[in-house]
Length: 79
Ligand SMILES: [Zn+2]
Image (cartoon, rainbow, N blue to C red; front, top):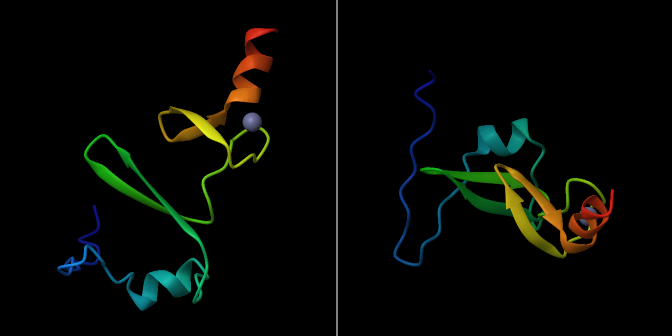
């Protein structure tokens, strides 16, 4: 397992994403990121949280690391 980067959270709860990681993921100034908890881990992903099935931003459900909107849940129920 990689040692990874270590950063401190400041008094406002902010943390800097190291330049090497921003470069590797092509994250630039004003890009949107999404954060969520998976067990005891904080997951940060480039881009906004979107439904894994239809890319809607109206997320209502989380299954593991995937997000699903209400419309898709209803569609699945009707299969
Ligand atoms: Zn959906």
